[in-house]
Length: 389
Image 1 (cartoon, helix red, strand yellow):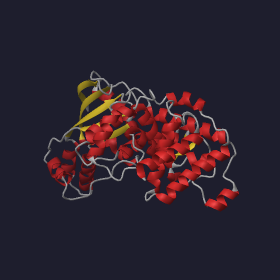
Image 2 (spheres, rainbow, N blue to C red):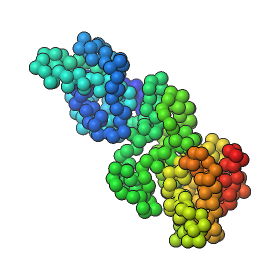
Image 3 (cartoon, one colour):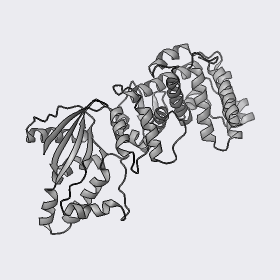
Image 4 (spheres, rainbow, N blue to C red):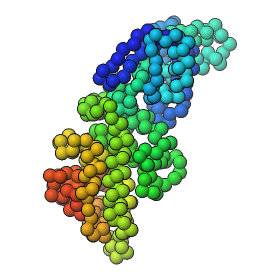
């Protein structure tokens, strides 16, 4: 295993190493990168794909296109390193590897090795293990840069959706708090009951809404989606930890509204007259995925319209938010959401639209609703009705 080329990618500010290694060395390097990540795209199973033919080509020692990896931590890997030192550094950090391009080729290589390990054909197995591969490795690439490069590499293929790729990148945040925020996965069987706890899936949807400036969930992945996402992502600051900033601003705003509402809840008279509300209190309302996605799309659009200079502005704006009567506000926003429930075919999408309007008005200093959740809930419904009724 040795580095044959060392280039610097100025667009995403990361080193790109072209490494020559054997299939055996590659297997040792990336075998855990496939099994440890639950969001990794699955193997293409159709026998009619080119991957079925790749097995035959590999047996003939065909040179395949380079596989692209990224190291999510920053280590010193240099073209002047001795081969043994370079290999040792890489193996020590293999738990931080992501496969950006070449996942299906990797599955095919592993399947070929498995096939021949199940036979007594040691000679052929040895030939395969010693076949050379070219592997590109991005080093020092931040998460946003990885996502940008994943999109460019996957455009033109059958890609993973943007949300799937975001989930892959940020899965490790479920094990560590960010700015005091805890992300909880569905598989943990826990409820995000505390104010600083959020469902990982909901936060990912919200971040996806921010990146794509669209609060509605994707029905499927397609090439056009990736191109549109790429155009928007290319405008973001590649040096910033955008996900952390997004999550911090979401928590700051949610905490502010919940604190302003205190212990206030929808009263029994309201429940008897209107039935179950969207949320009995501020926590139930603003920690739902519809609100989180609406927030993400809203701040993205406000940045595009140059109303906000960036996500960091939210921390200052939050100080201007005030609720005079929490009970009146809770009833008003539930009334708006009840109207949507009774007049919309796709209720979830309508609710996401509503919250996008709500946050755009609440956080826009040029708006008459600025800093006033009660007025923002009224104006958000009017704007939804104007566009959809």
